[in-house]
Length: 488
Image 1 (cartoon, rainbow, N blue to C red):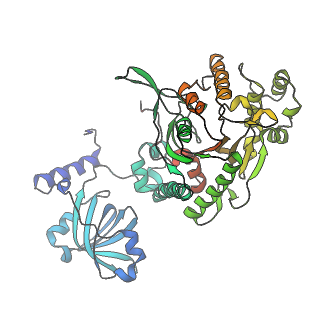
Image 2 (cartoon, rainbow, N blue to C red):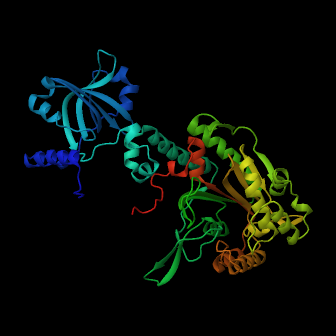
């Protein structure tokens, strides 16, 4: 136990010790008969009036007025007022109640009624201390406004900021709606390993760990892709996974090293089929969770019912940067264009990398309304089929809303000879200094050598989707316990 207490905490600790010495240890309670919650009582007062109930939660306010007092009890559904009268609960119990502190966990048995002022309340027959708070709760508007404190002590954030609780309730509803959408369409939810011998399926720096028994280096997965595609090889035609990925990269309002992804794969379709599925899923989830397809986020109105815009990456760069990459015939010309427009180019960059850099700098921020960016260059798409008639580009799309990426999809590359060549190129990129390039996964190559059907796949950043549907500005606002720097 932390012994560095301030004066208020010392007083609370002394109260606890006195209760324990008197044989009334609040922590000795193991069960309390909860029969109703705050929202249920408020919503159903006409039915529940004069009914006996048992409620429990955290005491958030207390107003002692001689022989009668009021307190607000907060449970997971909201707050309800409790009227505590000495003659109803007994003098000894009333004296004990007056020693309760804000933040204590209490149980109340009583009758539902409405006060003279019209407040729906519970008139207490008994009030029981179920857990002692040794810390003073922060005052909502002045005591827990600091973002750092809110993220580090999410439990306090949830206690004093009810709107935060609502975000996470919606998060769960969003994930349930995603599952329902896919389950109804015949997708099978599966689980694949978090620890992998090769971190494939994405371009990112992985976290490295060591397995002592096997005496081998292992990686926390950066993507769900390659194990799921092995299942397509094995005969499943529609699979998905909702799971955690881990990327050893920077932290920002859009990035957390540990995040939730949805990946789905469907045999016998391509990226056009996945585009249609994606639009339908975004609409269905919004309608299920919000009751509308119109979203207000970051000052913008987004209508998911409207058809999503479709634009190639080359056309987006041409529109927003004024550079036509189809007219650039060589890498040298692409490098010259980059220099002219102040686009940073690394030593290992090919023409496709430079196109992506142009897109990131000039186009991405303009894509406020839902937009599919299509046909990415082959250099940055090692797991994607080539676009027929355009061998330097692939059948791939990314979905952008509010100037940020929400999802990534391919017509999956199922040619094992081409896939091996792509992996070899990625390995050369690693040797040239690109530590996010893919490694060669021999087992995956063997799998698709047995034959993989034409397949479409999609990955959705679930945390960003939650941000969109809850109008949250930072990914940390939709993750219960975001990654934080260690306290010094």
